[in-house]
Image (cartoon, rainbow, N blue to C red; front, side, top):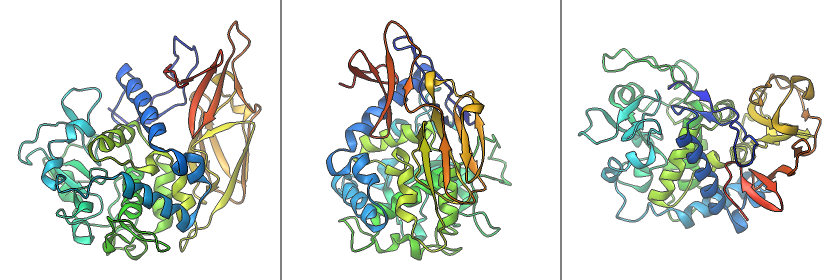
Length: 396
């Protein structure tokens, strides 16, 4: 149940592995592989036309905010009277489901597996990532948005209260959950820093306003830049982006992104395309960015900008057997796990350039040539003129 890597999964049908997926609370089981395949399909179907990955990634700042704000306004059903705070409690089994234990859900902050049947709030309750007292009242759309309101064990929820997220002493840090409460059992399941950051940015683009862009769900209390500091929702934009980039998207988040979409119609784009967060917030006060370029290597997320703190990403090379000697990074310190292709960039001093030996990911010569490609931010397989997902589902 610890936060682990899914690792490289070999597929009998294509005999090629997929990129590693950072996971919380799920093992590398067939259920996890099926969930990831479903995630890729739903992600691809949601971002089309003016909202394709290419179209969004070409934007930045307020223009990107406007596109995402419009997409959320067009697809979210949360404004309907049929969606309420009370209706959330019976839906978590479909959204936060534990892939290893049927009927259980994964709790926010600690990753504990809990019985998902609502018992009046004795086992778990509903945690507002953006606190009610700071703009997300449960009686308005923002206060009962499935993407934002997470199931949390009673002890963990009461410990945070409405404290803003951050690393300093007066803030709540989900990377170090310390609770003096007999109901809480420390399980050390890894960081939820990135999860929290991605929800806060999501709330801002769905319910906030920037550059004159706002939709019908607009809430004046969802203005991120005015909600920084100990009396707000996050310590600062640099800390928010740091958490987002150093705690990669997990399968837990992917599964609940699919479930939330099935429930209310919209997705969290910063789970689907993490690189968009820094593209959108790069001009905020206190943010210093450095360019990121790659050559001869495929990288996911495809960051083109980074902060000094750096980021985690995954690399693919020929025959998906990355080797330490194949990767060279300039402009930053780095470590590279050759077993799963996980790259850590840190101590950035200037423009970052990542060099690998291959411009494509071709298999060694076999009777059937198989090539991996990146399309719309997804890893796909070309084989005999047809395109497949990494789990063997035919795309076209």
